[in-house]
Image 1 (tube, each protein chain N blue to C red):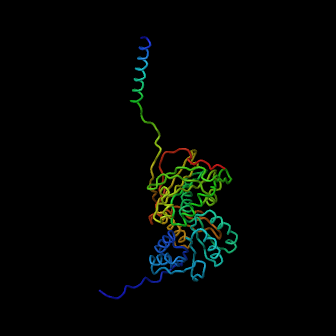
Image 2 (cartoon, each protein chain N blue to C red):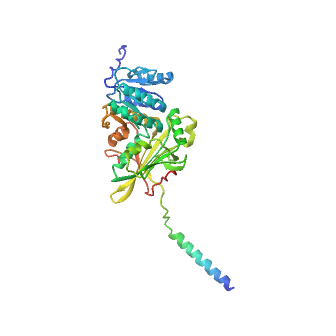
Image 3 (tube, chains in turn cyan, orange):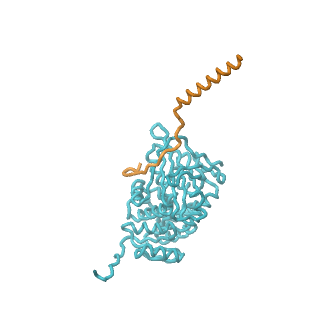
Length: 350
Length: 45
């Protein structure tokens, strides 16, 4: 046997990715990106030294680190992917637009989504791309809604429910969403409900099962962009593990799930389609974020934005190729085959 | 005595009717749950 050291992997060829934030979701995003053939090196921008070091150790030679996502970037960055807490997204998006680099956010926060949507004029003026709604919900949930809608002739209701958090920042976002007034799209207008107006028991795939969920505003704007003619759109969040993950401040290994229920007309009958996903929340969110990034870079053929502007990922991702790639990476969707009934979600009281 | 006999007849009829209903019952309560099936390619339906 030779004592010569094994040759190091050659320098990865392909577009370089700046990944801002390597917490629970960012670390999974980084792992999925390095497992994607065609992605070049990763630049991990993280202010917390321990997290930065842990991510570098996990990724190895493919990654280099920056201690400030808002500082100088290497010249070869082809996309900025943000897995930062919600408040960090808009400033980083502005930097990316200034520097002419596409920006991708996995935020779940309603206010941050509104802030990023408000960048539309400067994004278009700069011929840039900003993509939001790239996590579990909003994100994968909206793609599943689109997939269900394609099997119906008309869609009149879409109800999305989600449980699960991935780290302390995700817990803070979900708690804020549950504190704030929920918003619902009903009969062509927005309705703001009272706080916690209509708690509903929602059934997710096992092992999550039934959870109480409350109407929220998070992600509803992106859903309405996709289904502007629907009569009712709702988004609900539930606490994970019966509230236990609140106390654990968002254990990154906790289960997360989404349930997407789409009602409409098929032929002459009213029909519903229910899709769901259950996976470790950080894994599902991180995988989704990485796949959207790879698609924007043209490394995976899952769909591209139609032009410059701010888009939700579900507006351009092709559901079947995306679900195929997600399943290949272990994030699997399911359909509920149960007994039909009335639309189960009661409207938020205005 | 007449009232006692009449009560006895009513109770017998009630018992008989209850037994018939119980024996013929089919448990027609609608099931309230279904099952999840994994989506698979090529259509993921």
